[in-house]
Amino acid sequence: MAARAGWVMLVGWGGNNGTTLTAGVIANREGISWETKEKVHKANYFGSLTQASTIRVGSHKGEEVYAPFKSLVPMVDPNAIVLGGWDISNLSMADAMARAKVLDINLQKQLRSYMQSMVPLPGIFNPDFVAANQGARANNLIQGTKKEQVEQIKKDIREFKEKNKVDKVVVLWTANTERYSNVVAGLNDTMENLMASLEKNEAEISPSTLYAIACVSEGVPFVNGSPQNTFVPGMIEFAIKKNSVIGGDDFKSGQTKMKSVLPTSIASYNHLGNNDGMNLSAPQVFRSKEISKSSVVDDMVASNPILYSPGEHPDHVIVIKTAKEPWTNTPEIFMGGKNTIVLHNTCEDSLLAAPIIFDLVLLAELSTRIQLKAEGQDKFHSFHPVATILSYLSKAPLVPPGTPVVNALAKQRAMLENILRACVGLAPENNMMLEHK
Image (tube, rainbow, N blue to C red):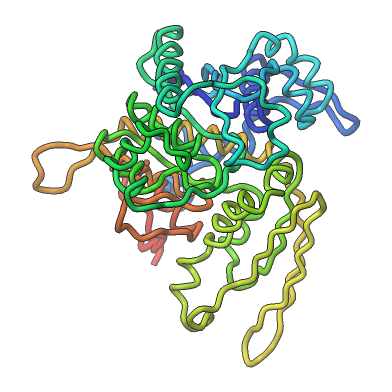
């Protein structure tokens, strides 16, 4: 299968995640290696579901057979990704990488010449939606009314397509977490009201929603990697009407995967460092992260009234500081007994997030090319524009209105794998293994 090239625009390109992602693409494409005191490291895509994992495709002579995830269907080759995007800071990607202090110095030195000429486009900035301390770096801004800002983003997308001679781009928000937007009748509760509010330059339309409006207007997939409610009801209705892919919310990295596997046992403290912690120091912005993280196990808790009484929920507290994360938890077990679980989790957020960004972009693009039909139907149709195929990679999965939210990690992974299996004519995996019974 021929590798496909991909074109990606990041909102917050000059942030820690954007610079780390860009550096990773270049390092892998150029085959860069670098030496630390431990060993010589080679560029890789470890942590990426699509690039570094496998899917069971059957069995042969009693042995299970697995294939690389990326080999089942034609996907974008991450080494062929062309990156661009917006940022409220005008630092070059090389200088932004140095500011982020995520990557080893020896690697940064080799990447500088590739990244020095990469400069983000001006971005939308509204100090009412982020912590006040983010204003210090805001020197690369789109001015004008909200409608004018949307028009500029649309123009940027079209010019990016023309420059690279492509007809498809995926846009992903990896900028700072915003505060929650108030959902108000007559303001953003319907598509018509949201568009009217845009014309009126209403203050409560967030920057991330402005980017989403621009992308949907241009028919470009838009993925939200932060926990704020970018997709207010009117925004979702707009995407559905335009049949334009949207997905999110919030990268599922760090401790979240562990918590969604062991919900009955985990009472956790979440330590947030680097710029993530600084931005979340504002109470109104912090609330977005708190809502996103606390909902991670909701469906699993609700499914088991034996372990959880109505209204009962595992404890989860967010602490804003940089520290090693110790978990010492003692859940109740059989007949009043106790079982103590001790975990230690040190997360390097941007190095965890970058592979997830690859996967979100690749799967969002893939979802635009998959069509299906039910038995008896005459015509194939696309997936619903609200991309539940991205649930495995999202803390708070966005789902179509009226659709149940599934947070259980195993279910999310099985859904994704079975969709890919169906694309190549394989039956869904059920793990009954009847051939061995």
